[in-house]
Image (cartoon, rainbow over the protein chains, first blue to last red):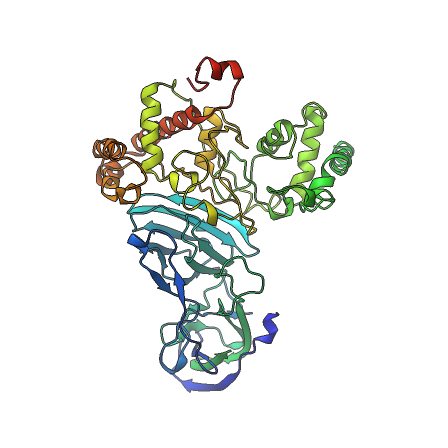
Length: 243
Length: 288
């Protein structure tokens, strides 16, 4: 079950002149699902139905027009740069027993502000790549807010231990500013890229369950690399297919 | 002195391999030859760099003193014994250094940050404090995992797993065996730091009893008698609102949170039937 089995196919690599830009070039594109879309799945709500509802639509694979894939995280590897980007704040809210937004990306060193908008006990159990605990914070009070810093680059994910086993969120952090998260139509744009040849990495949480997983949230993530060329003053376009 | 350090490191490695490796593995990965014969919790995998019993905030490494304490007194309720009768203090220090060496997190300056969550002094227990503590236990929803009677059988308990995906149950407060210690100060430490790697989160900034919680008692209907729910509602209506609480200065917020925490801790200790048989016979509550 290796990531290399999930192959992305580049359909087109076209350069559009977009006028001279002091900061170099730009990259925009879209991530699409290849093949037929699987039936949308639901996750059962097994606790606190009065607040959480009966079931939740699964967020593993959210498709827009032309099977554009939402919540894929794209980043450029190998870009020479000066100083790392300034840390930002990303917010994750717990509303009707769901983390909102599901996937975000930010510079390394950014703060995650956690909010509980629900009148039930949630805890935010953060994990880092490798599956070790990043932190575990109780949030028993409605409208409570608390913060944690994601110091390093990489993937962090979040789960609730308080019986709400369907909740999950992801935050990617990077040491460079060349990243984006695809929107509802699967589109993304990365600006001010120094001209050069780079590797575009596309990550998606995946929608196929991992073999032997203890939780239905443990899917096989997809990671696809694609060479791209960015030219000064131009916007390169790329389309990546996932299957 | 380089020679002294080398000798200490060598000694730490010898002690580790001699006493610790059978359970914790020659490489510190928790997969020693005997480990599979024992039920959960499994021996700690030191290579992960995640530790349950710490004085430091959630997500952080333990202090060296935390590891020394764990090795010295053991972990009650598990197969980890206390080594104070076998190893002297200097030897425990050397073996703890060896344990730290299994995870790169200890040497990494950026992940090595350690902030102690201060504990403070417990006020004397009283029947009043225990009464209030019961209400804190219900209002903060500890019962969802820990059960209405503190036996570790709450509605969330069957779904709880460690970070490795191994099912885990909360402790039985009535049996009164606590892995990180059952004194008031030790319970305070556990509550504010959380037990990293388990579902027990840190309540450092989350020990809050706010008036708004009086509106969310629906989950307890049918589980508790109407009298107790009523008592709880009256207790909550006497607490500050969220707006009032968050408008307070940091030290006032901490004073309120500490008050709730110590009440909760006195309640938890009052549940324990642990203690000398003659105490139980005479009805002397060990918590008072």
